Amino acid sequence: MVTIPEYYEGKNVLITGATGFMGKVLLEKLLRSCPGVKAAYVLVRPKAGQVPNVRIADMINCKLFDRLREEQPDFAEKIVAVNSDLTQPDLDLSIEDQETLVGCINIVFHCAATIRFNEPLKDAMQLNVLATQKMLNLAHRMKHFWCLSTCPRLCPCDRELIEEVVYPPPSITGSS
Ligand SMILES: NC(=O)c1ccc[n+]([C@@H]2O[C@H](COP(=O)([O-])OP(=O)(O)OC[C@H]3O[C@@H](n4cnc5c(N)ncnc54)[C@H](OP(=O)(O)O)[C@@H]3O)[C@@H](O)[C@H]2O)c1
Image 1 (tube, rainbow, N blue to C red):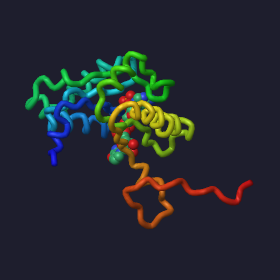
Image 2 (image 1 turned 135 degrees about the vertical axis):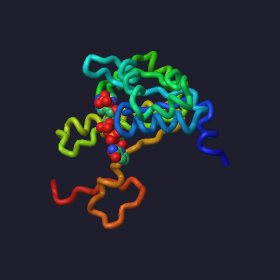
Image 3 (image 1 turned 120 degrees about the vertical axis):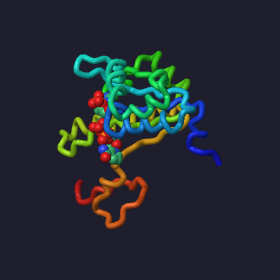
Image 4 (image 1 turned 45 degrees about the vertical axis):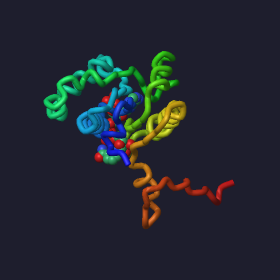
C-alpha cells in the first residue's frame, strides 16, 4: 500500500482544462498535497491575445494558490504550459511537444470540456467527444488516463439507479 503523495512521487502529470473551475483546483491540490510531483504539464490554448505561459502565470497569481505559494514558494517551476487547442487536428500539438509528452507523462487528467448544456451540438461534440478521443489516442501512448466528467452521472437519465459506471448507449429501434 502506498499513500497518494507516495504514488505521485517523481511522477509527471498532464492536465487539460487547467484554467477551468475543476482543473485549477486539481492543479493546486496536486502540487500542494503531493509535493513529490515532478512536473505538471498543462495543455492551454492562447486566449484573448495571451499565450499559454502568460495565462498560467496570471492564473497562479490568484488567491487559490496563496497557500501553495506560502508552503512551496518555487511551485511555479513545476508547471509547464504547452500550447494546445484540443479541437484542432492533433490537439494543435507540435510533433516535438507530442514526443515530449509521450516520453515523460505518467498520468493524464482530462478536465477540459464544455459544460454549457445549450451549446450547439456540433461544438459540444468537438470538445466533449472528439477532443476526448484525441486525448485518449495520445494517452494510449502513455501509461495512465483519468477522465474527469459528469457524463456517466448525467447522461443515463432514464435510469432510476445510476451507478459509477459508463453505460452502453441505448440501442436505436424503430427506424429503417
Ligand atoms: N464544475 C463542476 O462542479 C464539476 C463537477 C464535477 C465534474 N465536472 C466536470 O469537469 C469537467 C470540467 O468542468 P469545469 O467546471 O472545470 O469547466 P470550465 O470551468 O468551463 O473549464 C473548461 C476548461 O476547458 C478548457 N477548454 C475549453 N475548450 C478548449 C479547447 N478548445 N482547447 C483547450 N482547452 C479548452 C477551458 O480552457 P479556456 O480557459 O481556454 O477556455 C477550461 O480550462 C467537465 O467534464 C465537467 O463535467 C465539473
